[in-house]
Figure 1 (cartoon, rainbow, N blue to C red):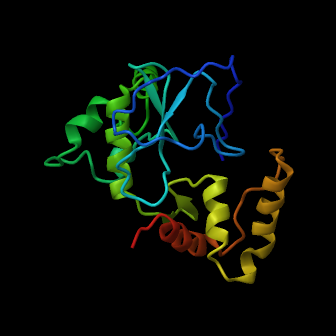
Figure 2: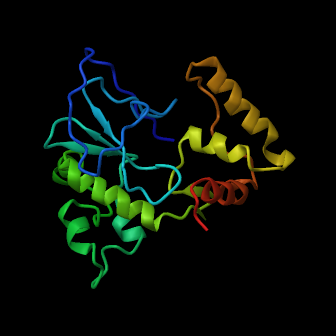
Figure 3: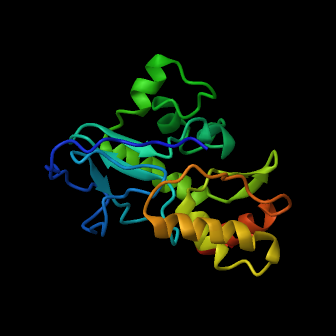
Length: 201
């Protein structure tokens, strides 16, 4: 699992307007053991998110520059949003979401999106979101807090020890070096539960 951590820099959070509406986030958007934004980044909650949870989150560094976590590399291809005739092809091509492998220019572009464009992109991704089993793993990647929420919906002894390990990790308030591999044979259980907690039928 790719883990992103950021050092807190100062204590000032810029007042970046939310292009998606007037809703307010009740946190800084960080995810335990996965991503902590810089103190100078602003978490822009998608006020029009069609799902019950938010997988892709937008963090503005300035009024002109924002990034998305998890980074949505290649997802335009996966969700068929780059195909000829797609209403979103131009947008996704413009911001390199139709590139399977990003070069340095693509990385620079995808890490410095206009906040309004970033929120439109994440909204479209959430509209098309459906968790699935791909090559023996959950796709798209689900952070630990989502997996733990999914645990509550799975009534199967196959995942009991794994879910207890995650609960203990959260309770410790320390990111421990533990094995995050799902128990063998449990991926389909988590896929179903994740789709349920996101409100995906």
